Amino acid sequence: MWFETIKTLGAMAGLFTAAFTIYDRLFRRRPTLQLSLIYGGRLITVKLINFTNQPVVVNGFHSFPPYYKVLQSLHTRHLIAGLMGQPFMDFVSPKEEANYPLHVEEKEIANARLPFSIVWLSWSRPSSLLPALPCVMILRHAKIEQLRNHANTSVHEKYAEDD
Image: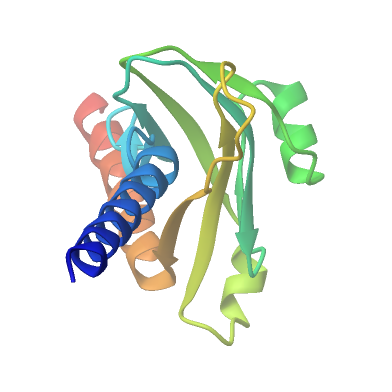
């Protein structure tokens, strides 16, 4: 009888340890993604927030369906590479944020069958050989259009104030 009780407690402890290890390795201390407007609301970006104490290596952004492209920066070389679909690598230091411009394929969205796209970040830690689950963000086309209209309105209001 005691043997069965000890065996059951050992099994429960093993399951708890396995669950905590999976949580610790895959879900805890992960960067987060969110949409943001920069340059006074004129540019939609994907903001990567690394709130951990370890650096993050960005191995590229992907989307499905491919209505959106996340670019490394607004430099001409990065724009061309991003629009051609070439992935990029970047490094985000601990407790830092990085903004990546979001390019919208307008012709594709006009004919879209789904009301959303899934954008995910492929990332890793320089100190770990273990794979990291991608950070996922679901972009609703209506929300992106609303942000783009806000961005265009902000630009027009700024030019009206300058006149």
